[in-house]
Amino acid sequence: MQSTNLQKDKLALIEKIIHTEDQSTIDFLKSILNDESSGYELTDEQQKIVRESTENYLSGKDKGKSWDEIKSRLTSKRNE
Image (tube, rainbow, N blue to C red):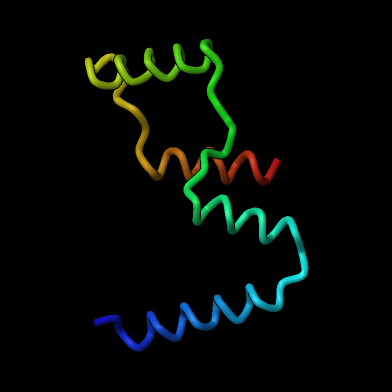
């Protein structure tokens, strides 16, 4: 049996969909609900980079970065 909140959320979404007049929104929802691929694919070069990065990480050559390092880097770029 579904929870009351889940039922309410589903009904609220159905109500919004019923009143939506924007075709792009409907198309987007259809693609999500039909689990269609986005049509985006990595190029061979991008796939190669991902494979190499994964291999380096798994082998220990690249230790990766901590969340704090990533957050600091993104914050500094945003403030530039």
